[in-house]
Image (cartoon, rainbow, N blue to C red; front, side):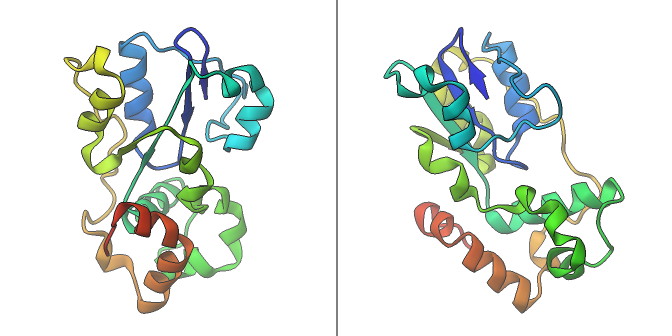
Length: 182
């Protein structure tokens, strides 16, 4: 998402606190252009670059993103889809079953977004991360607006050896870059 008045590009990775981050940015006066005219808010960097090449190339534009533990993120996505009636009761069936393609963009590896960012926050320390990225808002709290209540907080219970290995492979670069552990 591009914020022209503030010269900010935000790579919105699904299930990484995007609603809380958007609310925080609004509080500190960072307002976006809604170039998607609808529900698509998680544009990949190449699409943002194509829409806003001048901002992309400008050294004055801050590019940022937020990453999340990949196993926790995928369970969050599953719980979100389950709540909307778009997922089966079985995590592995949802992950590997015939409806998997419907959710592919939502479960793409985070590496599809974050390497283009200059500053990267961590979901696990969202408020601290956002205050570091946007020091002008260091006194403004981050309100968590979309906390899933329909899931077990410990993501580990959702995984089989097969699904754990799948995420290890899918998110191998993120795991290496940020030291995430199961």
